[in-house]
Image (cartoon, rainbow, N blue to C red; front, side, top):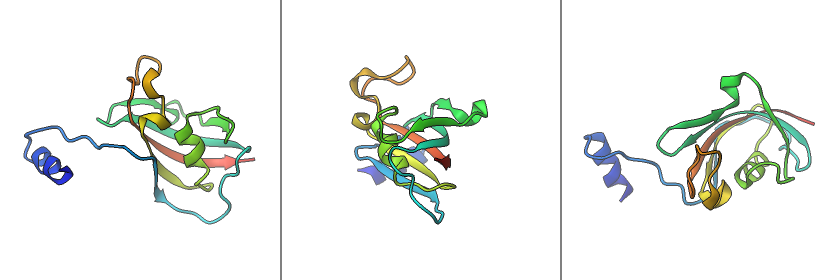
Length: 127
């Protein structure tokens, strides 16, 4: 099914969009060291997109890292679970099904209800 959609998209017969049904952390690069511990203050850069590639937010565009307490529910479940699997200097794509993101409520008028999301996240530091 997915290969058929990819072939159709390549020949321009349809728009192929990735389907995210399970949470996943896909490392872009890996580093040595400790994983970010739950309860720590972590600083990250990120870009968030809908599955069709529409960017809805980016700390990189603002040139201002985002800081939060990991594992304290200050961010969506995808981030609490995903960043805990990362080390300083690592960059990863967090694949967030709707139930790990904003669910049926959506967010801010830019993330529709029941939307799966992709986040390109880089861990800068933690303490």
